[in-house]
Image 1 (tube, rainbow, N blue to C red):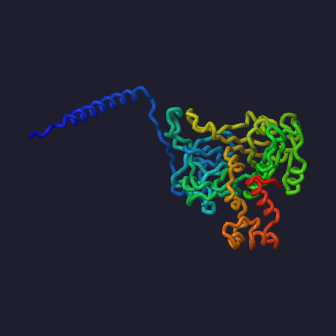
Image 2 (cartoon, one colour; image 1 turned 30 degrees about the horizontal axis):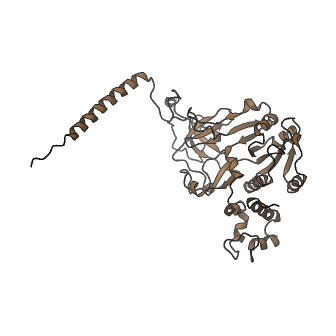
Image 3 (cartoon, one colour; image 1 turned 180 degrees about the vertical axis):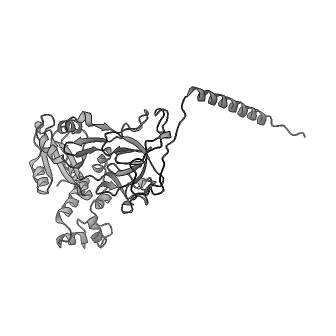
Length: 385
């Protein structure tokens, strides 16, 4: 019996040949219609361009990270109001002492290599791959405002030397400015408590700005409690201007992170406290017009007296959805004693032979820190104080 010839192979080859011809024709046509081809980022690095080596201002510049996105990082050069969209060098490694935190975060000071001149011209709207510099290294952090990294995030940072154990929200800040409202919306004590504990964990000085006092008065018991614990409180009204001068004086010479629930009037508050805030506001967003970063943006406000106020969306993660099993992370000084507790899952509240409670009674742990621990657990469990 004669074998049947497979005619489909010949047709398939003809279709491929026809498609290839059409593709090449359209490709040649596109090259004639588009005057510029895409370029890629290029920088010239010296052999001694290590993280701890002195950098040449002609080849590099120093700046502060203003926004971190999947496609790159926004950097504000020292002494400039402009934002530069930068990539990260494959040789970048964070300092060893911070190997278990996010490699890059808002507030980090970094050294950026300038691109070569041959890559600095072109049509930005056509070139979505080009950046305005490459981050070579970052300086050691003086402070970090962070939270525990969820399990799904611990291996997402390709530039970290080890899986990140904490998610850094802001670095090198010295103040956490918490904005709450007397009404519209009603002040939530548990939310303020979470911000205060996060500030203490990160070594930041908290300032509580109670806004909208023109609509009512804050609970006196709460104010007395926070004041007794050393929290500086400013009663103010962004609408009338009352208390804004006092708060502005507190922010002078400091780098502060803005925190607060949605609806407390942070935008109105910033415009009332910082002169010409509308002109000084710099919105960090994606370089293209596809809206990738329209919901994830950071803003920087220059405060008179060499101060800085940072509003980053990551701060919202501090005040919501803290699992009970992560409460101990905010109290690292408990760990040596917690390992000696009788029960492995000891909550340090009612269990017998709890070494954390024993350390508090013996004065080895600060009593106010243990009170903060209990207060945080109570708010997460929905209990009253």
